[in-house]
Length: 171
Image (cartoon, rainbow, N blue to C red):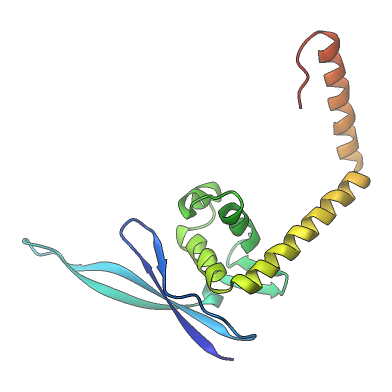
């Protein structure tokens, strides 16, 4: 298995900066090197900073359960959840971390970094996930569960009552 090192820097505003995108070969492994500024000593005149190099492997962030199921380590959250928020809802990593409180900001950044360095493969992963999701939603529309059907009937009855009373009908 070929190991590829990726350089990324997080600045003092928490923004991720990445070197050039990589093209990864099948069965290659990415090692992410995060450059995080760290204060090593405090001097009365000025604090000196030293760069802290940490090597992190993808396996430290993700569980690759199947080709169509990549989850964040220690959670049941798939990378598609974060990437959907990032790509389609244009949320910042900080907003995503605030929405999914079981995730750390570092996990969100790691997912986005993984996407940025594997756009082809992760883009295919996301497309397949979206198609599967649409297929499942259509299946549920065609064959609703008894609970969903009961809720639909209750809403229809409520809306009919509101309409009869002259109140606005809900969506």
